[in-house]
Image (cartoon, rainbow, N blue to C red):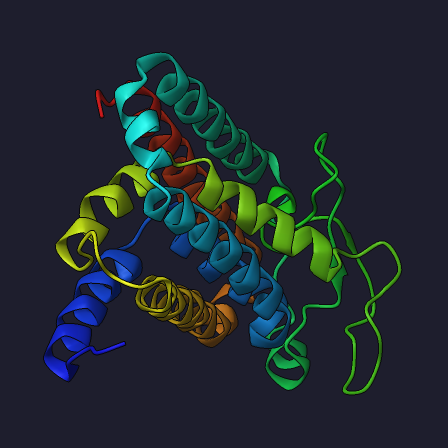
Length: 247
């Protein structure tokens, strides 16, 4: 396999710009960083990365062309993703605003506050900032409070938010032919997908770190309420935009 550094740099920058552009997945990473800290947001980043890799593999396999050409299939995936984004947004708007314990968040990477399980069984953003049953803030070395969202639930939420956007597959379907030729080896395709995975993971973690940094600003009920409202409206707007867009 022969690949030039110039080629790889151009591809990496292209994917990086597309990945870190603010969207539902990055907003979710920011919110998980605010609520749970960087360490627990690792699960969210992994969920987004797995979904992105699967979408890329679909594009490389040529199935993305089928999705792009099939109006009915495209609509089904698009509407399902839009409905989930709206659901997350509504749950954020309805969530009670309980201020974060900023000191505990900075020390442990977790809020020590548990959120209720939504109809999907996925805990995380659904509870909003500080939503749920507040308890003693966790200290360094303690385990997650019983009933709190575990890594699997944070992973699942990030996965569904990313996977619910069929435009990502269409984007990859348009992207990879610019960097792959018909005679290219499987190893070359694998390298591009692996590069994408690293960028997707780091992009999510960048937003999670930013969320953890601003957690101290949400240490009042008023700030937490406005955060829930702002993020809730953003999720609903993203869902509506996805549902109403032609492509």
